Image 1: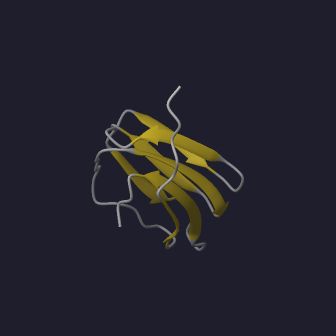
Image 2: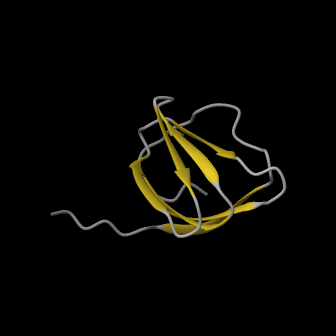
Length: 87
């Protein structure tokens, strides 16, 4: 089994009621861990995952994805670990 080591860990903040303009993808993989608030994560515009604090989601970067903060008044905070680094 190949060992995967995250190359970058970031905290992402999404203001209430905001999301990406469209799906995007790249090479690698990512794991998300919700810290505060709620978001919807759409994968290939076919699967939708609703994440709340304590939830986690792993996916390959090659899958198109977009995020949307479903709250009307709370900023969503997400811990993201990915490889290779994207920033």
